[in-house]
Image (cartoon, rainbow, N blue to C red; front, side, top):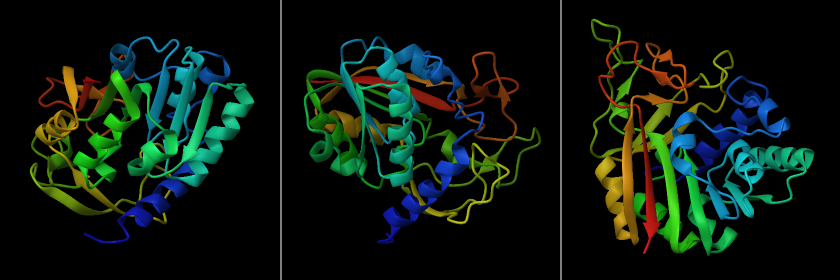
Length: 273
């Protein structure tokens, strides 16, 4: 594995911050109106956060963190490794006057030292674990952050969908072609010039290192860290246009234009013993 994987990935995400500000995907008007919203999958699975102490891992610019603060979390801490992302989050939290939200710049593997333990809820969603080589270490971080009986809510791209890519030859129906193996896919050296939220922009820091973690690897890592699975759901949609052939549904999620021939998203809730 390349020793510079973290610095390559951080440079990519640092560059994305100004590209994301003001885009439709990161429209902050709902937060400015005091009515922060989550994607439909997180809305359906997260539950009431009133009075909870929450840790939000890999929070990017903190929009979902601030949404949870608006919904009455006692304290919600967003953590991300990108300095520009955390600076944007802190500035916006100040603009909104949300004193129950805080932001910390740190690597996700350092989250227990950065945030401490005893949280009621750990929240992580969309485009997170593909940047992490050690899924067992990730699960241990979550367990260390939670109090006994505390819960972890996770929403992510379904790993089965991630074996496909628009850059691979499409099938007769225009669906994306097979790109990487499901098992043991990583480290993957990716060159991606276009940004998912701002496709007109061209990324200078386009070289990233990513990993594909199977569904069983995710569940086994959480179990090994002492978390008990309450439920697992697979979804035919996800919050961004993962493939060109997807269409947007009435719930705002992107999904297949016909039958849902494979899942695009997954979500789960697990509790610390």
